[in-house]
Image (cartoon, rainbow, N blue to C red):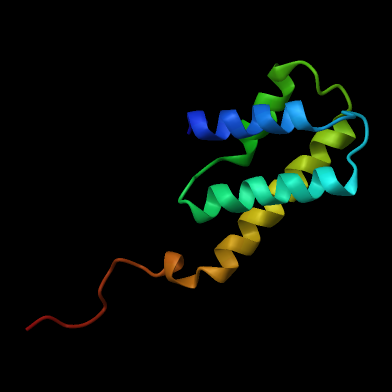
Length: 99
């Protein structure tokens, strides 16, 4: 699934806001968590592999450990969101008998 325009805008916001691409500050991490929490809460859907590819193609993220940290934050936010939204996992199949 390709990244939506909103996700790309958010990734560009992260790129512009992070002062050092070699080391994330705690406030950078907080900002990234907030961005992805807002994306998820507003119904946004993304694929972490696509986000990783975006960082690889973007060009200014040369430190792999920093990108990995961002991806870990994104993955954690997604897992936390999914765990708190249990109804999302309910099956559409009805196991009740229809008479």
